[in-house]
Length: 273
Image (cartoon, rainbow, N blue to C red; front, side, top):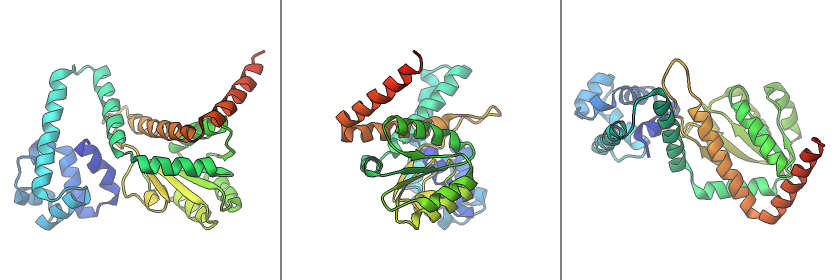
């Protein structure tokens, strides 16, 4: 798994001092790999113990493990530069591929299956999402409806606050937030969870607020192409994860979902006649 993608995913859940270490590594990975723990502490203006805590928080054993991971990362990056051109189309392409690879590494099959079963057995599915993540929510809503699921989604947070009051224990709530800390989405999830309904969350950051309040937390890569033009890499990673989830969902009862999909396709074809 890409070390920098892992660090980025943990970033919002780090303490302020740990974020200083993370930012330094994200900005200067080639320089940090040659530093001692004392040098890194001085550059980040933190104590050495903070660096150790940071390393453990992102799944490493300590500073030496962090340095080894950095060396491996730098070696793989140099290999990529050697193997591929640096034209804009190739740089952006690599960014998307890297994001998908990172997301693949984040996916836990057990969580996918758990989320798929909840969706399969749900009476109604309510999707909570606002802002840029609402586009992902709309795509998910459309996909699930084509599979015969009753899905409620509107991109307005105020309207979401209204319809979550109607959620029952037999329903499923799906919260989507790129940052994982969108206040409006979190408040609506907390309100919806009072009904006893199961909650599935999707975010691009590990240990973000939204991932801590769901029954099943799914995480996609947060990696984006760093330029003034912005990037859709994080959104593409979310779509890949959701595509995988829906494939697992359909595999629960392929015949049933195939029949429903055939009916919806016929209905769409009739609109053309």
